Image (cartoon, rainbow, N blue to C red; front, side, top):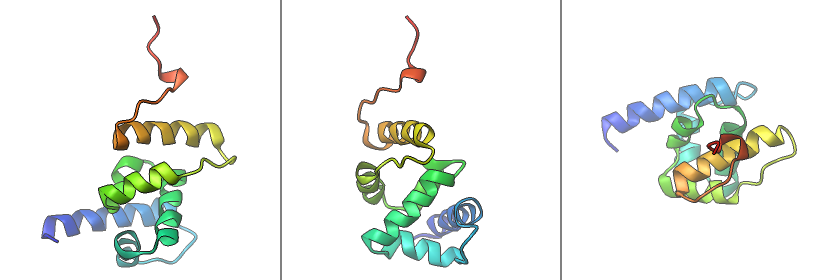
Length: 111
């Protein structure tokens, strides 16, 4: 892994720690380790925290590999908690990460 990638991962981990994991006691290196080498359940835990709390979800998800981003996004179940917000966020990310067509009524162009 090159130095620039390491620096970016540290920036992502710091933001994730501050915005998404404030109630836990993770170091930035532990977050990077989780995202890069954690098992499926650990990665999904981190992904869910990012989905629910990150201010810039797309950037924060870059802590994961593109393959992991895609897999977790497709396997993510939108919870009842903050459902409308998270469903819209999920659809937007699905469009950007998987290039799948999605329907978000409030973002449609008026004809």
